[in-house]
Length: 181
Image (cartoon, rainbow, N blue to C red; front, top):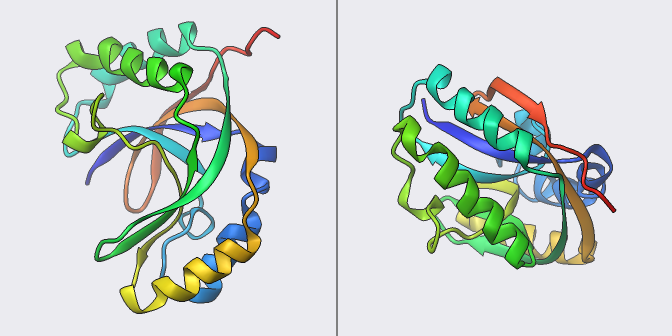
């Protein structure tokens, strides 16, 4: 089972995506959504085939203690075409978001896990998954539904978690330091 390190959206930000999640679920009864996976909407920093959770959590804790919450702007919808397809909300790729991502990888590099290549700095496409495992035949309807429900929105990344999936099992999680105004 793979592992992921993710940044969870705070509850108000996650709730604001409910209409988009509904739109995907109406289009594809089999699509995996955050609601169906019973997880908070989130942005993944890294995915691994294997790792030793105890070794990584030490690095994660040190990283979390130095990392404040981060306000982002979800500015567009995107699609990884698959198959199977993934529909997502895309944040503005700010300097702060890229610095956070690079700092995460620098902080955990010594723990030894080998990250999937498309989650490494210079290859990462930050995204908040709205629906995954979409069947190609349902993608046009899912896109129409989500476009109708879409509007740009602010969001806050407030918690970092280490999970094993599918099914999703939270192995470690902690809140990020509140940002100073």
